[in-house]
Length: 279
Ligand SMILES: *[C@@H]1O[C@H](CO)[C@@H](O)[C@H](O)[C@H]1NC(C)=O
Image 1 (tube, rainbow, N blue to C red):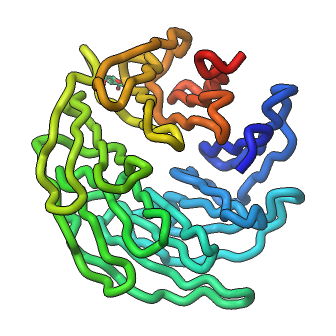
Image 2 (image 1 turned 60 degrees about the vertical axis):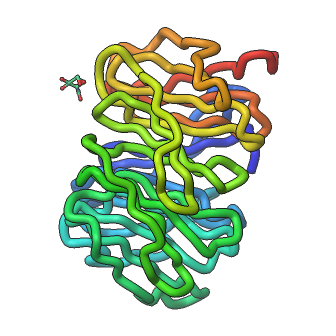
């Protein structure tokens, strides 16, 4: 909830950064030889939840880096995606085997509540809606699924000839946008899963990461063309292009308050961009 801090994950470690000074505040090194695929701050700021290729979900204290808990065997082929509900009571994880798992998080216990088995390949991205009742999962199997996470049922399935890498809810939650290896940015209706429009996201290379502003007016994408692109949502048009990465962009985020965009690439670079018009 602040633009002053962000965290990144990679092979063996998680790092917390102080944005104004471009300084590393904390490095959490895991003793196992493992790669962290995804992280999220719990909304209350009390934990960093992380998804690892050794099948574990690890939670750390953000100030000290101390390990709070581990969920062992969370997924059989590595934990590939993770999200947390805004009430801090649940973690939703996705695995390399395609399962989506819902965990109940209490002070001292972590309980597996439900396993959703519909994806047949790795889950690449999970987003939860604002009231914590619904989520969308993107998968390399070419589907995105919208789930009711109260009744544990599939609401909609979106199919495309692509390996989906990223998905975002528009803040009004009537539409989602997706992207992946077909380099297309597709807009979909949440209500019935129908396609609304499609725009060419990149001339070459997969789109791997995407984020949207809190008012839904703009979104950013990044991928194998090494470019950070800012888009006008309604027009589906690029307004700004960031040139700087020399590796494939794997993820990117717009910080709260639209002050910065943070993008990371496979060569280990972290680039901090001034959000256009904010400085
Ligand atoms: C970067 O993307 C290109 C094109 O998609 C791919 O061939 C290459 O293997 C990727 N490199 C890395 C390090 O992931």
